[in-house]
Image (cartoon, rainbow, N blue to C red; front, side, top):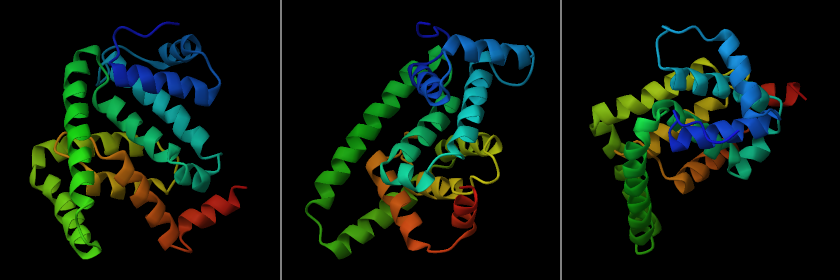
Length: 208
């Protein structure tokens, strides 16, 4: 099946990745979704379809080696893009997504340029201020938090590790609603390695 015209570019990308994760064709996912979807429910067809795909993949992720996926960065990249797809599911959102992407690339390049000239102590201070600045933009952050809330609602309970993703997202969100993937991966790995015993790890080991 070709790209779904009613979906944004990021939503199409996420749906394709979900189909690969699940071992299903997009047509099969659409057929299963439409058996459950009822027109008139809150949210557009596109948003509800993205929620459906996110829910199925979140369940599948629970059965995988989560620590390994954190280390290789695929967990953060997938879960963040799933939230972004929920936030911008419709084809009309493409222009907004492109603008956010340009802002994010510019911000990440600027961060790398600045950090290359700073001492470790200055770098810590710089990260602190770059982290809290987005919280001053309440409206922008609220949109991101809505995406987080929606994603968390479809995540199985034993995937408690999502709290780590929430921490990374809130602490590294830009005002363009897109965080730096490099920063996100680093924060996620640091979060996992810094906590030797937490319910997340108990759940992870008990599920094997």
